[in-house]
Amino acid sequence: MSNLIQKLYKGEEGNILILSLCITFSLIIFIIVSYQIDIAFANRITGIVFTNLLIGRVPALSFGYAADLSHFVVISINIVVEMILVTAIYPFFVFSVKGILKVKVLEEFFIEVQTKKNQHQEKFDKYGKFGLFVFVFIPFWMTGPIVGSIIGFLIGMKHYVVIFIVFIATIISVTLWGLFLQEIIDFLMIFDTQIIWILLLLIVSILLFLRFRKKIWK
Image (cartoon, rainbow, N blue to C red; front, side, top):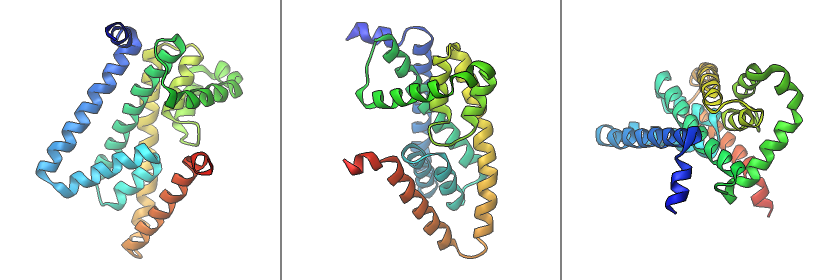
């Protein structure tokens, strides 16, 4: 067990995993302190975190604006959550490739990412770092920061380079999406606040079904 722990925290991928733990710990402390100061605010922050984890970026951003949180708070929390996911899952993929550790829950996802990488191999070879940036920047299904970071590793980029590109692309993408969604929600607020929550609930329900449809059918 001690040998496994040493391997997990050794090298650049180990440093990235440590970074993930530090960011996670900081976010947890921030939420705990927030509950001591303002319970309503802390509940909204927690809602953003779980919405991003379970469903994704766009619903999490929408939830934050619908909860009447500031632009800075909504964008910052979403960026932090996505970077936690990247810096946690990326090292585990590297460990899986190296045969150090296998996480059964993630293996199917890793196979899908490798298939995605093979489909776009020529584009990644041609555009390199810029192609990875665009891939992370566009938040469609099977794109985004987590998949992009893994693909960056598969095409031979250095660990820190991958994380840096993903981090910059995520900041820009989340910020632009935030500006766009805030305008839409501000417009809908003219009619009725309940409309926002009904639409949000509908979107969340559809996205949850699409994400877990395979398990539902089984």
